[in-house]
Image 1: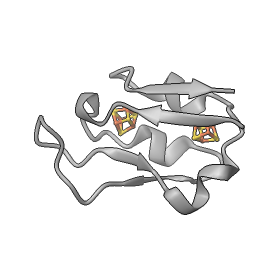
Image 2 (image 1 turned 90 degrees about the vertical axis):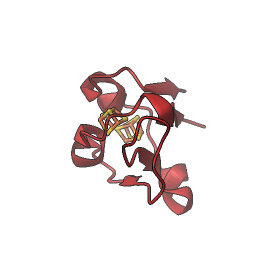
Image 3 (image 1 turned 45 degrees about the horizontal axis):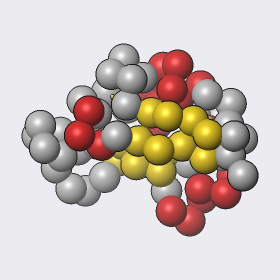
Image 4 (image 1 turned 135 degrees about the horizontal axis):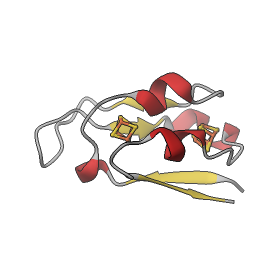
Length: 69
Ligand code: SF4
Ligand code: SF4
């Protein structure tokens, strides 16, 4: 099944992935990461909706997202 893995400690909180995921399944964590940002995270209850389209990974300026299909 398609899914993504976000390296939360690389994330600088731009939220392009949150905005551009066509399935709207990425949200903002309530926990700071190691570099002081609230990172993006995959919504646990919506993770099965990922199509593996790679939009999030292509948008991410910090190459923090890997997509698996
Ligand atoms: S696009 Fe990358 S840096 Fe921006 S919020 Fe998403 S994971 Fe973080
Ligand atoms: S691969 Fe596509 S559907 Fe899956 S989280 Fe990224 S943008 Fe959303």
